[in-house]
Length: 196
Image (cartoon, rainbow, N blue to C red; front, side, top):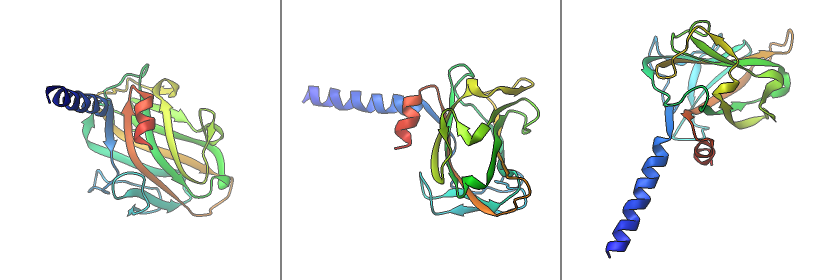
């Protein structure tokens, strides 16, 4: 009996420790209120029941580059450094073939993509060696690959997230994008587990 209780407590402790390795910035279950609501340039954002975690994702329909952006009211401690950390999120893109192949993921501790910010270029619509595909993509990016650094971003006080994707020249085709479950970890394996 004692051995069984010890084994159960150990399993619970391991599960708790692993859960602590993933810090969730946004579960994308709410649009939130101004000035901290989800925003998309030229298109209203909405809750979408097509999701990867919880009950909803955040979606927008448009063609302008700034697909999704949010300023958070409270600074968020990612629990990671640029050297050891990863950012991960689920991202849905309806028609990647209509995109030019450039864009950026940005995070900031100054509520601005040009101040105290990290930027990651979506060059060729790739994340590492993986190309974004139509439908849901599990995006995992090492923070050390965020090469566009402005000022002195503080990973213990992140309050801004943005995705920019450019259409092919003169293309104004509206398409849907969605995001779900934005998280940070120093353990890539945990992010892959959460995504399953």
